[in-house]
Amino acid sequence: MTHLQTAEKAAREAGVLLRENFHRDKEIDEAHHHDVKLALDRQSQDLITEILLKEFPDYALYGEEGIAGNQDSPLQWIVDPIDGTVNYLYRIPHFCISIALRENQTIIMGLIYDPMLDELWTVLKGEAPKLNGKETAPSNRTKLEESILFVGCGKDEEAMKSGLVRFERASNRARKMRMMGSAALGMAYIACGRLDAYIESRISLWDVASGILLVEAGGGTVDMTPHPTIPDVWSIVATNGKIPIEEIL
Image: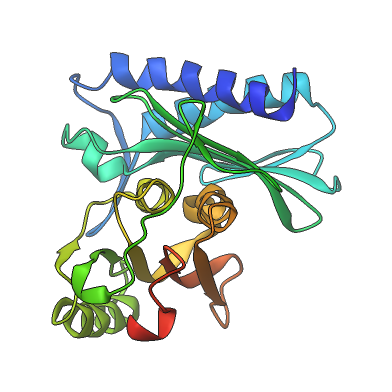
């Protein structure tokens, strides 16, 4: 199987697991003030890992629930087994599975799967993004006043403070603001024109790796600023490519 076929197989099988357990009580591994970790996060990643590394045993895997495979490999799967875990815990059907592949730090494949709506976004570097096999593109809106802006504030005090400042500034101009709970789906929605921009002050790579390629491949713009001390943690601003990033900051 190709990279994309393997990733789709893994995402769909994990999607079955998550759908089957959606209405059931969930086992919580860790609970924090603004976040939780579920046993199903681990189970979903274990299932995805088994499928990906069975097909490509020499690749590395870097996921929200840990690493696996050959960590010296230049090819690395980046996995978020449930992006939107709190939504999932509370039975809010807005979450997804994200699987990206990067080679020597360049993302070459991205996939985001919403198992509740059976919507699958896919992209290969150098090709147009697709939604359920059909080419898709960001919106043509050019004015922030016409846009729907997706925003996240992070979980720690510093990130939340800066995020709320940005939220207030942008909300005075954007048509509508949304805080939906899944960064990956937010990026996918920009890639297919449902949302126009996204801003968050602290986000992990596994949340947005697939979305970066989806948005940029369709002509959108993504600006990432690395955290000064925490590896693979960033602040992010993404747009449809027609609304300037400077208007949102």
